[in-house]
Image: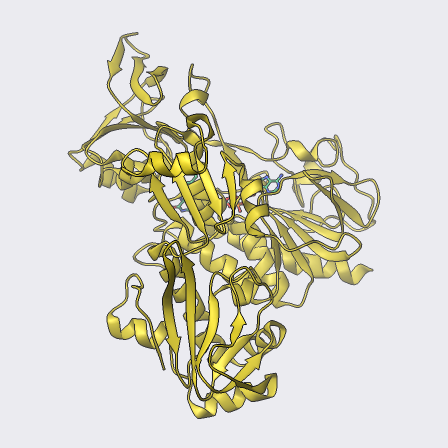
Length: 561
Ligand SMILES: Cc1cc2nc3c(=O)[nH]c(=O)nc-3n(C[C@H](O)[C@H](O)[C@H](O)COP(=O)(O)OP(=O)(O)OC[C@H]3O[C@@H](n4cnc5c(N)ncnc54)[C@H](O)[C@@H]3O)c2cc1C
């Protein structure tokens, strides 16, 4: 039995108690015993501390364990575990550092289970796997909702970097406290204390010790040690490039089928889907699911099966002239692998509009999630684009904004837009669709203040006091890093399988005696899945499907020797 003082979203009080902090039955504890060792503990003993990695899990057999976090004014108690309770949250699965301290308050006996043994237990015991995974995910969610982490972010809506870092931390599932410098009366005092100038905002205080001024996501990842050290001498079964839906699906299937898999992701798991407010057409989610939630679930699932994931690192090159292949990262590390799944998807288009770059994150956005939406509260906003992602953004943001202007370059909404979105847009009095229009200028000082758009038919230019613009104007494939290695189509998407025979063979290095498999590129053992593949259908379901199929084909290549 455990008691806890902080709220868990979307659950009743009873659910909170039973699901996040269940009490294990004697029979369940007996099933855990072979994986651990019983140890006597005394009051005041610290079993693990903030910042510690690889800590074991403790099941309380008798006595009591408190979980605490240090604060400016001392410490706060997150939870108290009594007999039947157990320690840990999702970092028991991910292996990331502890966000809390575990201190014995009543002497007794605890069952200590190492992280490796916990993973074996979860793999073998379906009932306990469900109990632990659910509890750990809910506990992490509660930490995120309460902002109980080891990071304080001081930011402002006038600094584009603020939104970038908030998204990075959220999409990596890392809890943080946000201090809004625009509204917090003590902000100046905080800045003075750390001798921070306005130019250095946002500021991230990492683990209460290190002050990072306007850091890159990579610097944040390094400070929080989000990545484990990588063994460069290891030859892996498969490296997956990209942690969007297709890459995460490949990771889940590869790891669950016993392959040694590493995922490398430029930013944080989720890909384009992670920037979607609500995905309503993905099988099994009749009420829809936000892209970030889908990504978090998939990320946890991949880690549960033992997939390694590196975040905040770009793959800059595939060394394809010999096998095993080598993947080069932006820090110069070269990782060797027998097979590769390229799941690097597509990046949003950045239309050529004067001042666009200046206002990225301070009025110009490429995603419409719960990060951007509150900024639009009671404002007139613009969404640019006529496809599915623009339609979804319009529907979602109209719930926050006073009015949404949807600017469509052509004379109609895209044929690929789902009917349910068209119906909602057309029947929404808070939405005006402007066909044959395009933005010609952004204007403002620190933040976007005015937007000019032109009616292409009449040439008339209109200036509107709009502070938030969402550019959802399609995407280009992330394949520049593959230059010279693979056969690409005229738009830069990767040609696979049967289509290779139809391609002109330019850049093709096909050397095997067999024909390429379904998702195989012009390089044997290198597969492409999802939005990066020529002929893909730009849907989460197909990306997930292709990611999982690619693993089936990886097995075949590995069996070839
Ligand atoms: C706003 C929006 C809403 C959408 N809504 C829906 C919807 O409701 N339903 C639906 O079915 N589909 C929807 N889609 C489409 C869907 O999200 C995509 O089809 C899907 O995400 C494709 O998955 P993917 O894994 O192939 O690629 P992506 O999602 O593009 O993921 C690719 C990942 O690879 C990473 N990457 C790229 N290059 C590198 C590199 N060199 N090194 C390391 N990592 C790299 C990227 O950072 C990214 O995380 C939406 C798309 C958007 C943008």
